[in-house]
Length: 168
Ligand code: X6L
Ligand code: MG
Ligand code: MG
Image (tube, rainbow, N blue to C red; front, side, top):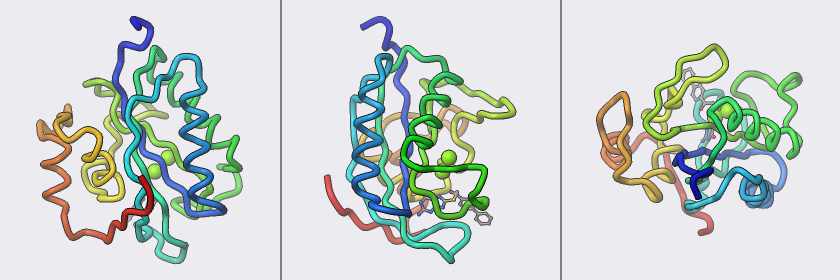
């Protein structure tokens, strides 16, 4: 599939509504895109909120895809899927509760620093709610800026927060 040449990784989160149904539906929506092939899906984990703590726990997961979309197109697809699951960025507070967050974590080994898009995701290496699911599906993938594997980054953040497996 030469149209789907790029391996990218997405981080999914939800802490409003039926979190499990939302994550499963979002993964289905990603796979339904004609230029995205879902290759790997992590375990879904329950995680304490990082940042503002006056919000409910999250379910988080990571997804590995192959895509022919350029990074900005992939971001647009992620934002459309967020909106389709009830996310209203105009009305929510920064780092507050949201029914669905789909973050572009890695896009091949590309490094992108544009106003609306930073890849690798700037907090990827600091957050166990990202690293635990991502290490399950992409342990040997190297962070293109840090020169360390995802599994190395996960092991060196161990103990930051509780991460509880919910469903595979
Ligand atoms: C000081 C200032 C300390 C800012 C931390 C942390 C900001 C995390 C943003 C921070 C700060 C974030 C999720 C989450 C969020 C999620 C869990 C963010 C964005 N998203 N917590 N908090 N899972 N468990 O998906 O990552 S808000
Ligand atoms: Mg986001
Ligand atoms: Mg996020």
